[in-house]
Length: 128
Image 1 (spheres, rainbow, N blue to C red):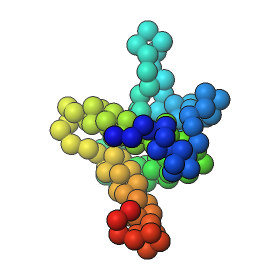
Image 2: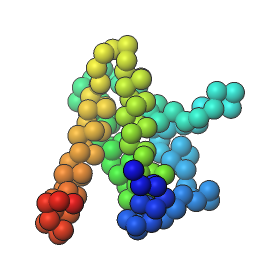
Image 3: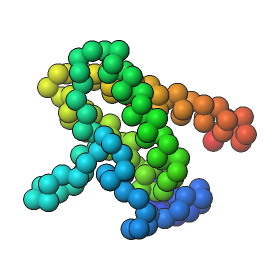
């Protein structure tokens, strides 16, 4: 497995910069945990139980996330989605399923991934 810093440089991603924006400070659905606990809560969203409203919220949060990573395509943000999904699962563990917020968020991110994949395949071929 290649060094992630080497891979990031090869893919044209800037190195993580301590002065770069931090998603915990910039994204509305994240927050820093108390100092005595430490870390970041990557998904701090409660579902309303109204599926349509929750889906609308999830779509908006996905657009916020996509805009953020588009403006800050750093190596550190390359792992951000996995952290978000992990915290979604932890948050919904007791209900046993994701809510409309999470489903719409993931659907919108996937739509953009498919569109990007289509361009990549058309540009560099199917083995990319």
